[in-house]
Amino acid sequence: MDFSLTKQQEMLVREMAHFCKKELSTEYVLWMDENVDFVPDELWKKFADLGLFNGGIPEQYGGDGLPMVDLMLGFEQICKASLSVANAVGATIGFGTRFIAELGSEAQKAELLPRLGQGGLKMCMALTEPAGGTDILGSISTTAEEKGDSWVINGQKIFITGAHVADYMIVIAKTDPDQKPSRSLSIFLVPGKAKGIRIGRVPKISFHHCDSVEVFFDNVEIPKENLLGTRSNGWYEMLAVLNPERIGVAMMGVGIIAACYEYAFRYAQERHAFGGPISRFQILQKYLADMFINLENARNITYKAAWLHDTGRPYHVEATMAKLVAAEGALHAAVHGAEIMGGYGICKEFPMQMYLRDAFQIQFSPISNEMSRNMLMQFQGLPKSWA
Image (cartoon, rainbow, N blue to C red):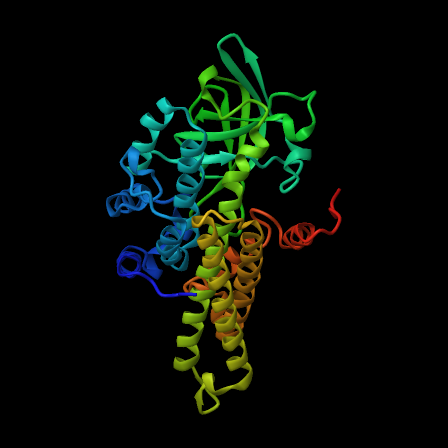
């Protein structure tokens, strides 16, 4: 068992850490949280120039073809700097690139993957609907009907990350309502500005500089060839994307824990009360120690899941565990980080309040912590608790 990084991986971490320190300073991130609803174009271009979007593109389409572990090493640094930014770039990389690479036709891959790698496209996945989040098979009512050489899409999606700026949406819709739920869904590539699409804002306390919005489809017509993968096999095909997504969200939790721990650790040393630094108080040392332990545990299981993915082994159990451990560790770190800072912990001029708000979102996204536990026991052979 070897936990060491290669020289190339160490260089990747250093380069991304340097970039984030320069381009994602605390002051700039807090400014974005109050003033924008998505990553500014100039920052997006800097990520593109750095090569971020090219990392997961297969080599035959001009990309670097990096393994999941390497992608997560760079992503961790972004997550520590800003979850909104991580979520914004992650939607294009984790959904756009992966769906096209896995399910796109050769023509779609040849056209879209190089543009994605150059940062020339923004993409999102439109899956969640108002009737239910995790209950994908039971809640989807958006339909896609054949009409000559086209598909016509009608329905509504909600909490769709970055749909308001997306060049393309990956839309999951019901094409075969007479079939059993797992054989009723198909996946479509839909231009973001297609006629009949309307966007509605969803105000929320978290991820302020990466909006998640409502999307309404009113007789949206797309070409027949914009079907991705195989008709009625969408449920099984999108699992190839949803399982890796849990690794990425777990890394978001790792990022929050790291950010909270480092900020609270420094603050406890600098803040003086009752004749000395508050870092000498036993209860605050306990809070910090628990953050430190949770960070190590969350980071280890997240990278293990990524390593299993890269070695072609089953990783669904570890990815689900990683999301759960990292999400709960993130909320613990943000709550206790705010308590260490006292009144300053909820003041907008300090980042802890942002960490706290952002930590709440990953408790239920993309899958709730409660459902994660139920799924883990289902994987162990117990009855499905939600059926």
